[in-house]
Length: 288
Image 1 (cartoon, rainbow, N blue to C red):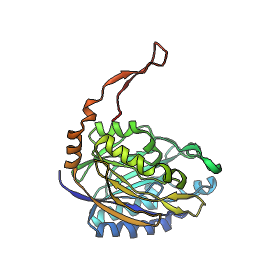
Image 2 (tube, rainbow, N blue to C red):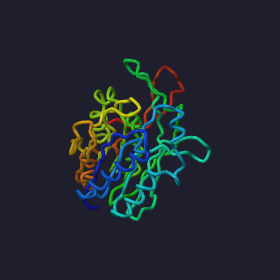
Image 3 (cartoon, rainbow, N blue to C red):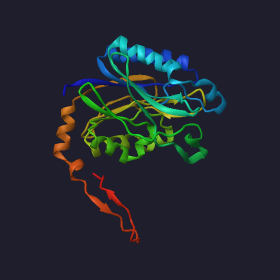
Image 4 (cartoon, one colour):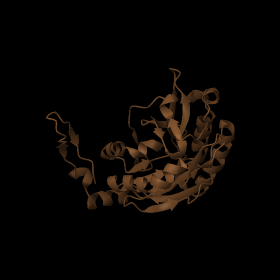
């Protein structure tokens, strides 16, 4: 297991996939120039569009998508693992997927992951979101090998479901991904603590590329892309909401060392929940 550099790209995606592809290329080249072997972009790299009709008109199938073709070409040209944190992809059944895609150094698609947990929330000050009205949720967690590490996939709101990350860690993931478009309101309250918690709970690196700033469709995202080590230390941060590239070294041996110190992945035990019912389910212990 060798040491390699990972980069998180912070973007402010607008409503035009073509313009966002230009920004994507510029930032990916900057990350590669800094020596990154694994480069991650945020959730909805392709476009952030609130209007339903405009959104439906902008997105297309994976084989025709400009973000997919741009990323595939960059991965091959630069010889990097390029992880599009997510972009909207039109499925064969006519539904949209919030889909992450990983391209290898030869440009081949190594893995895809469709976001499982839909952001259906009502926040303070009237801010309300219904992701399930636009996207079909995924049903499968994904872990795949890159550069001597094993990468576990997630997208944004998935961060609030620790069982997903625990399942991926138990499947061998020592690098967890959380590309996101966190709202400013929730980001200010929870972003740092949740990312550090997922790293600590699983003895894994966490790379979280974020959207940041005021977008064309009126939403505001938090930024603050982070890379966290397996001991929960922040080792790189874009401490703002402007487009940026952050880079840090990933040493899979550090994940192994953290798990040896606190072997909670091995120490978890089955338990029942006594909630006054004789038929309470048995669960797998997952707390750190």
